Image (cartoon, rainbow, N blue to C red; front, top):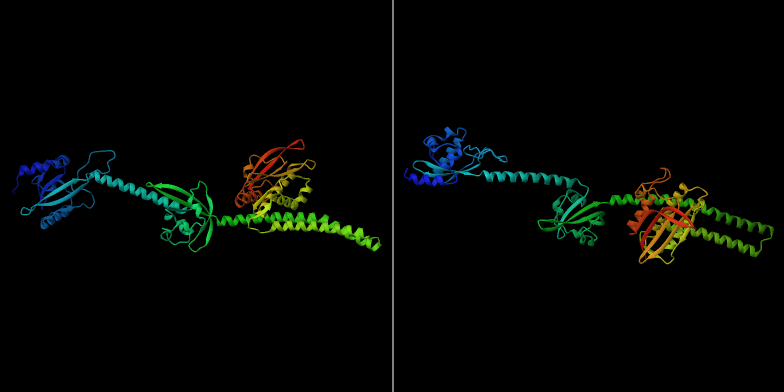
Length: 496
């Protein structure tokens, strides 16, 4: 070997990595200070000896093959252990958070003397990098697991969830794909959200509460949905998260409930009308019979005949009016119209006046005849009749026959709002249940006497259809110098 040994030693012993000068038979020719410190093997003990004698578990065949290749090609090769990440087994100090027990190493084999068939094995300590990679990989796996759980959670929720930026869809869950009748996520990505929401103004708002909207599918079919839009910050960029719940089936069932309630009210009203018609029909029958008898006896004067005909005509007109009011109630009018509030309430009372009279209930009206409302008149009638039926039942169940029985109805206008107030003197609603009276199927009546849908439907009509408010509370009031207490319903609607 023609090299300056002292100079070689100084250079190799000052490097911060292991250096072994070795031949292809694995006989050690040089062992630097770095290795002495980390292996505990002095160079004097290992030089001239075979590396296998000190490291019997070393993959000697592979190492010899790599050395032979480096010498043959006169180029560096890399030794990569298959199982452990080291060439020499160098134990690390006992540190609590240590990932590896042995130093992780990167090994390069470089030709040194081709004639003597010597190579230099460079051993680099990559333990810290390996630990960082190991920890990063653990974090990555943990994140992937969390992402998988989150994806599973999002895919099993009932809500369709869509992430979009600048009105373009950039991600969505499985429910959204199914809701819009797509086969894969790719078909929904990059779609313009404005093409899906029929009411475009909704997208301009970030809502604290869910709102109803019509959603359009690719096949042009649409469905009613409850949607919510929230802003979120991801990597300093503002995104919007849209959640969609298909409520078309709920709407269908709500309509069925409304129809069920209306049919129940119709049944009661038909009974009322039949009852109301008895007296007018008796009047017509008696008047006609009286005129016929007088005619047979030859005592029917022109004046008497005229009076009888007037009585029959007036009574018939009353019957006709009753039928007209009932027909108006039955109309499936889904369009808004301008109607007089006072006239509407009086018509509603005429439909149930027989029931109220049978229970000796006094109706006291304080109505403003100049209030007009542009809204759904038939649905409003249904809401009012449901409340009046509820008041009638409460009075019937809570008051005695000889008690004073009162239902007061008043209307007034405040700025652009119409206020309708209905109060009875049945004693009020139990405070434990008053918050539940607008819930579906909630009833205090016997199961054969009530469905619990009347007030629920009234609440739905006023709030959802007519965009007004309705509330209930217990209230005391004075009537004819006497104090009473009862259920107080307050309805607020936009007046025209």
